[in-house]
Length: 245
Ligand code: SAM
Image (cartoon, rainbow, N blue to C red; front, side, top):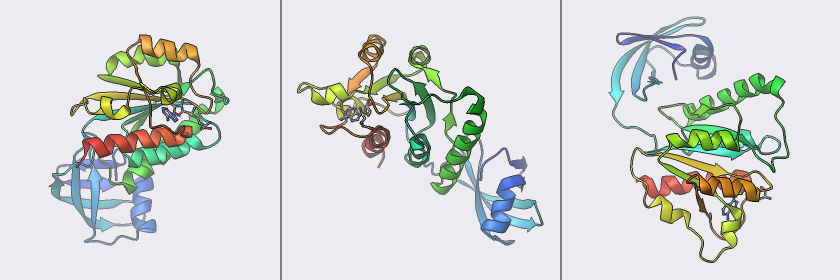
């Protein structure tokens, strides 16, 4: 369970709201059961429930978990706005695979336009998806979701990253392509990696040119053309395979 629903007072915590409901009504936990609670800084504590009533759970910290389940690097997925509910899938599976941040990006070939008036509702749903996926995959941190931005804004934002990559479908057709594995082999622990994936129609030539001019490496993700949601998840799984034991 994650803060802010958890109040920490020394080694005692109290859990209210949705998380308390989940513990009492969904998991049907009892006094004496153990739960794992996460600090925003990524540390996790093993706690024992000391009391619970209608809507509040008290627990005592027994031990701090030494092991982190986070990727050794911070990966941001900048995803060209996809159609339908594919972004939900990317958030859920991308969280399980260890992404630390998601940026929806309005691209030339994005078919959908996210209605500005409904964005708050959409973001609330997205936050719920990543929180639940973080809990189920025992993440120490919940990934951040940023409001949609343009490619120009993404390029501006990209100065904060150590490694910038965009998966380019045209690169998949070039024999002397830049391989994703080649770039990944040069990534070291604690680097911030920005990984950009195009929407269903791919990147426009203009976008690809701009990204290259601004230090993004164009890579191919194998010889087959993947669906946009598959591409994000393939890239995250490959990073995990190369960087984790
Ligand atoms: N039309 C399909 C769809 O509906 O999803 C495929 C779209 S593919 C053009 C979408 C994005 O996935 C591309 O812009 C690129 O970022 C990524 N992608 C897919 N396959 C790739 C590959 N083999 N190499 C590099 N990038 C790839």
